[in-house]
Length: 432
Image 1 (tube, helix red, strand yellow):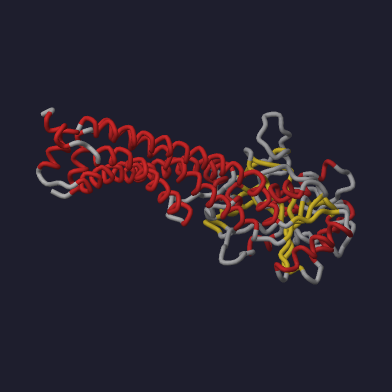
Image 2 (cartoon, rainbow, N blue to C red; image 1 turned 180 degrees about the vertical axis):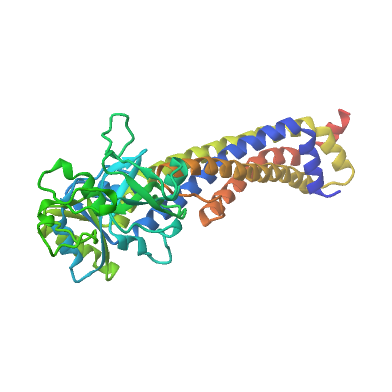
């Protein structure tokens, strides 16, 4: 019988003690696995979204707040800026794409995002975050395209009609815009991005809904929705009421502008120009997200990892105590093995193998516990920020962590193994 089989049989004879020791190792490994996976995947997803646009321009304020509110739909906007600022950005020689963003309303807690039709065709890198699952894109005011999660949670379908409420959070006291209902014309594919939690419409829709707040805001509205035409337009024989985008944007405001530059190398120069020479504020999404991770989430990761390794250290102590007590109880067994020809080295190795078995089984159980934790937190992340976290997969950090756990387990087995190694065969046999 090999040493591996002997070690396994000894562990099997102490089922309860072995199971508790494995569980203690699994708790630490599960925490380490979940922390590393969630940290890596959320950072990857945040940075992936942050790299979709080179610059975000909005009202002056906190640049991180600007990025979170317009790219990730997670925070309150910093304010509004004149549409004229957006037009000047769009015509800049270094800008290849510019998309306006207008927010202020929501439906059941999901933001209604007014933008241009061109954003729906934007595909950063190899990603296509605006592909349709069904229906079509909006073509005129008061038509809406739903993110996948919005459609799933609200029950809205293509052809459904809904009314937005003022504000970005769900509240029973929020003002309802009953006179400007939206019609669902499309639903986006699940993308695992913040787009899953947004409702997209033509920016004119947002302006029309809020036109009653300012008597100077006169807009055209599509006749299919029975909106009153502006009297100035009615007096203009050259005005075409069939084109929803033929508007005078003077005096209008947008929440932000999403900018794609000709080259990422232009980001810092472009940002400095905006911040120094305009009344708006520019921020680089990827830079703000990296700062967030370094200043806040990076510290949280270190704390959680420290707790995980502390649990593993305590588990290693459990391995040491468990094996040491087992050696004391098996002195006669070990003495018989020695009498039958087993060497001191083989006895030492058998105990080390026991420690190895407990540690490896603890890692396996911990991997499943970590995967379960990630699955639970994935549901939370999808609901809150739209990010899908995949199951645990091996990375360099995880391999290093598991290797460290194995090493700690083997070190914990050295003292019991040494105790077995130096046992007195004659004395132990005399006690039989």
